[in-house]
Length: 204
Image (cartoon, rainbow, N blue to C red; front, side, top):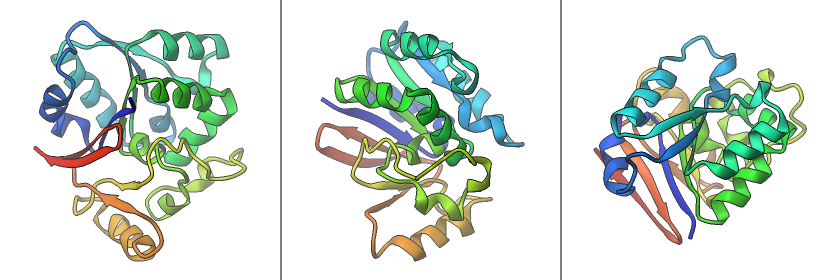
């Protein structure tokens, strides 16, 4: 059964995660910071790591853009969870596709492995990320041929809804796409929990 935990700011909803996934102490997570590699502001990467470690989760970092296919496959397949941080969604998707990590993640999540997506990591779980252009620069992904993403969920997460400094860009996405896409806006204090066909938004 498919299981996903999607957030805008993981550190702000880690208590929800602790309730959502009960047996987490001692489990190992493949922690993917790739989206942050082309960003100047990256404090959320360490914040997410610390929040996980506080819950007793063991971090096994995987930088997709510099790892071998073998390293990527081994870590994604052998660890208990997959965690994808925030940053630039387009650069993230480019690297996932370039390395084939996208196909492994889809396979693992469809087989029941828990996927934790924060901001860009939540948006890339949608079927397509073209809608993200109002929030992220797609110029950082010159090797991306199309915007088809992981397709793990049938909705489109809009993170940081009502939160500075993304208030305007999140609202722009809502204005531009609410009539054509199934948007799911979440603030930094909310998370989307997916278990099979059941989807619910929870506030911390």
